[in-house]
Length: 403
Image 1 (cartoon, helix red, strand yellow):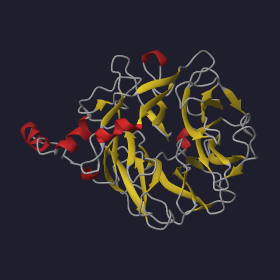
Image 2 (cartoon, helix red, strand yellow; image 1 turned 120 degrees about the vertical axis):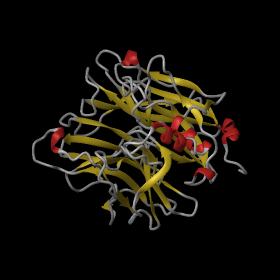
Image 3 (spheres, helix red, strand yellow; image 1 turned 135 degrees about the vertical axis):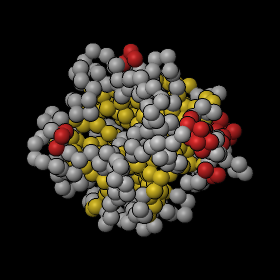
Image 4 (cartoon, helix red, strand yellow; image 1 turned 60 degrees about the vertical axis):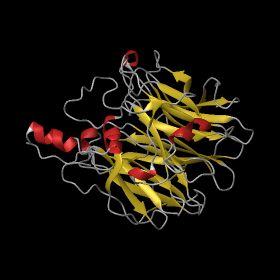
């Protein structure tokens, strides 16, 4: 990333910008990405009266081949993260082309809680389905819970609290992973309590990336020995909404959104217990999450993110704001050279849509991307959930050179 002093002659600034490589320029501008031919929307869950928001979720493939989606279905006319919501389930029997109606999943404690949301679905080591979600009891108590299903989502166990302490832990949707060792890992952002009042102003919104680990298939949990903080005094976000992906050599690659124009990255060589100092990654980004998953039976990764930073001359019209366009790329590492050209996932300037909180799920022939896609008609970019389907064969044209 190029850091420019505050006051420079325009001619010097232009000179510096022309030294950007083509990959850097594409990462900053996002203008070279083109939509893949097979990309199409298969489900639109728009807001409606009494249902102000349908948003972030997660997928899993059931043993009979059907796909299961669980997402945040808001109840009432408020769409804020702390507004009332329930978890809704839908299934597909045709590889995601069509979907059933909603089945509401009751979660213990939800009636007394401020909110329940941020789902991760994961196949556990014993074959059970694992349902992770965040229960927001107050501005000082947001923690992840795990419920298990031995009958493919028909019934669910009592919840296991994944964090022992009452703190404000933000876990994004579709973030929990199972490592090759069998260990389960939950990446979260811890927001410290500044005072005792139950209000958002009581929190320090500079996130501290923290990690919770389980070596007994989710029955008990412990916090990793080390957390990560953003090594900069010029931030109001810190490290927010972290994610982790396991590399083929077993190294864990962590990443988090910041307000410094980049996703920051950090690495673990011991299964998530300790981490390197966070540094700027190759992904330019506004304060919006990055999502990464590995392609099936491959060393290649799929990354999905908003590539354009929030710079001063860019109009940020609501409701999409700075979270547009949504792009993807295929690569096998963290350097520019190991990634192929970006492709367009979604963009609609006419209705000022904004895209974020992407869930990624691979089937035998395609990938499903579920993400927030609200526009002008929805009043807020988080209010609409869209599922997009892309044939895996279409990715071949976007592979990095030599792959």
